[in-house]
Length: 100
Image 1 (cartoon, one colour):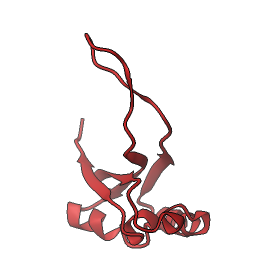
Image 2 (cartoon, one colour; image 1 turned 120 degrees about the vertical axis):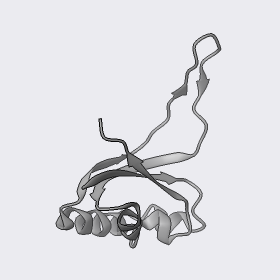
Image 3 (cartoon, one colour; image 1 turned 180 degrees about the horizontal axis):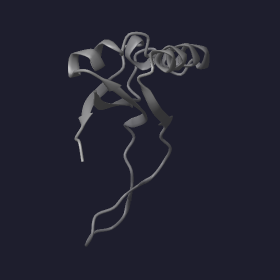
Image 4 (tube, one colour; image 1 turned 90 degrees about the horizontal axis):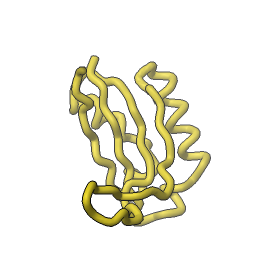
């Protein structure tokens, strides 16, 4: 099984829905029950660092991540159903994590 990460962004048309704790609880519970959930978290403020230049506050954008397992990119994409950010019209980037 492959590993994937969902990167959620703060651009949902319905911010209330995207941040609804009950919707998140239901979605995470469903992923946990599937056995494919490997963790996740909201992402707070941070810094953008580059050697040789000034440190800058990280720009707004990515607000959280979910790590999971799926057979394929299409199977991972199917797991977006019920994701509050996705369902609220926001962006969720789905990326495969390379095997190391």
